[in-house]
Image (cartoon, rainbow, N blue to C red):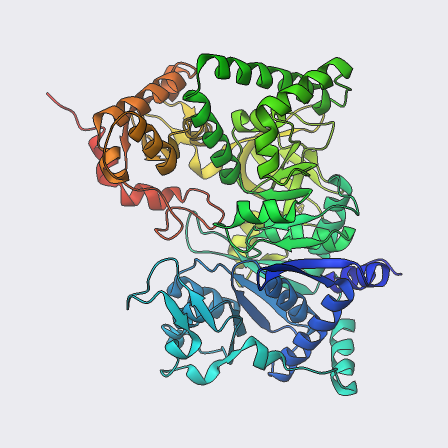
Length: 618
């Protein structure tokens, strides 16, 4: 078959080679159901035909507002087959932000997950002048939190009846049934043939950590390059099974899906984040990708148990970690650990690490982390426990990864070497620059921002500060805009300190502050589960808000901060901090959908608390 030029070429090659092999797996009626590559091809043909029949022309935009699920992938491919461009929208986005993305991108048709998302769009229907159809996947939904009317159970009929109702239909009604007629097939072939590597594939909107979201325009060629390069760099095997929970509205999740198309690895879609661990145990994946926060939560849960363990149990844990690190160090350098080390690790796994392996399905060959910096302590823990953790680095503007650690070429604290075909260098001011066929076409209708991001020589300016050693290993230290310059002129990377604080089993999130100030301060949120367990064991009563204000919990966190301060130069130490009575969340706007800190939002919300740290007292 010819070399792939578009995402559709990747799929066609996979169907030709693996037509009857499982492609995707999802849970329906309490059981996991497989769809073959041939089934994906036929279903997406039908979706594509209906998109075209709905009046969507070649190059127009189709949005998907949903959590990751099999229909997300099918509608994505169906959109591309229709010659249209996919616009992902996070399910957690507010009505106003969703409306901004839909109108800014020019979306004409929107696939949404359930009635609550339909209601969200109908609440801003006056702003959606270009939308001609809203297609709803599920006709009913059980809400985790009651809506403004106190409803937990919501059906599609419950949200209809007002303005915009005539635009709404069910996914089942939209797709119809039966085979495609000759006219529909001819239209899809015509539109598919009109695509080339420079054709728009998707417009992915940034998280907006520093301002309004920008639409990143990515081409078919960007995705083909990235999928092929990732499949070369990562240790995929045809016998693998991926579990995908990452939002496909995020570039990390989208590339994990397309890489599986390229290599032929089936993908099981997790039902939801609350059911993630349950689904892992059922599916037993051989690998999955995750943002660091999930790995941090596993680490802190384990360490909370270790802190309460007896002297003997703690000694056995420390021994197991030492043996595991000895083995991991050899593997990361591409060396054999030796028979004696492997024998001791087998014992360590049986005594200490076995339960964690069982919780992750018992078949994991490797894990992938990306989306934000990973604490070296967390990375070392997973490697020592017998999980090969590969760390990637990239941005939406680079179609995902530009760097990734490889099996046998891993260094803790580094995000590895560039993918095949990607160049990287560090500018004089320390900013990381990258260049390659994965660099975006530009920002949608924003030539000024595009010119600022991509220079005349094709180098994309990442906005991240980092270093590259003689062997090409990249280490990221912080975001350029996040660097704190103290009143004494010292440059401080807040993310490094925040990661150290979050390594405490009792801390969920941390935000370090102090730009142009005499010293650093921090806002800290508690890990509700671990802190509540600790409090009960110590006879301390109260809910999370009460515990955050209690003297014993304050003393507990102070001890962790003091231990961190001992390892830092004086100008990087935290002099004062406040424990907030709630955690940062996506819903509050303090975290992005990929669980990164929206620093500007956090600072603005808590400016009074931060300012009080610096008030002079006499």
